[in-house]
Length: 70
Image (cartoon, rainbow, N blue to C red):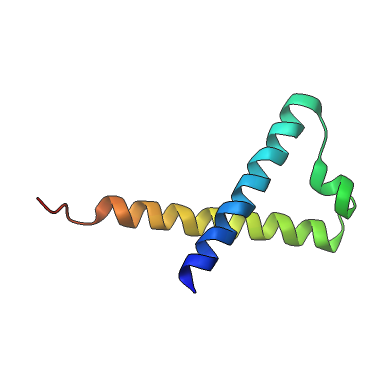
């Protein structure tokens, strides 16, 4: 179950990163274009991307803090 969540989190983070790249390079927001500017679905996608980024960050920190085996 956790592997599925990690995959979904990674995909959503990639979508968020690509969307921000499009915004930065071309001033084009793909998520808003597909789901509507300020719509509930757009806000849900942004919220999920943020939550997934936090989860991935916590997993990264946890892995870095784990004792190293020799």
